[in-house]
Length: 257
Image 1 (cartoon, rainbow, N blue to C red):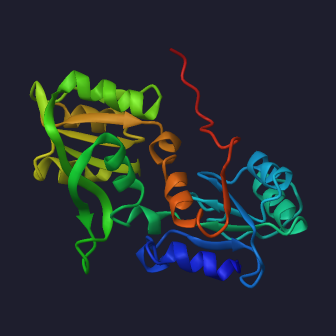
Image 2 (image 1 turned 45 degrees about the vertical axis):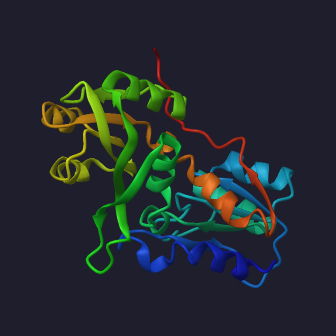
């Protein structure tokens, strides 16, 4: 396929108009008219991911987090970011990122988490001013109430990671709010909309302390909260091109238990 055709498929559900004003979703590196045979799917674009794309003969990297947030003033290979750009250009590898545009899609980052946890009938937690079906986070219902402690353990199993949490206010929970990535700012909305638990990443201690007694909170590693995004890309594109989930894509954060 032509790269622009692949971009059109992604942007049919997560158009760039959805992204936050500070973001840089979209084509990072590459020629829109180039032919693409295989795509490597990742959360982050790192040197190891670019090397993997070279090794696996992928001519496109699709990431959640943009490689480029701010303009580069030079490309000399002195930083990992510069080296990623150099390698990608040298090996004719395009890089496309769908960040907050995919966050804002109802069945995007947060919706995928809801699907994994069996949360149904979900809606946008913090909708945009113009469209209730576009925005950040989702809130919905478990099919049947669960014991609070059982729900926390289910989240841990689903994500396969360590987590921090604040206990829910009642022994059984059913209404769950989710925001993949750093979503501490929406905890008040989760409380106002009657959520029993709020799942997000990167919450500070005092934010979790403030939530205590009002809502249960589950705090995940940032990368871990968004790694199912790769499955969204795979589902969108696997009928059109060869897709591979990057084996070298992983959180750089380590937990000592």
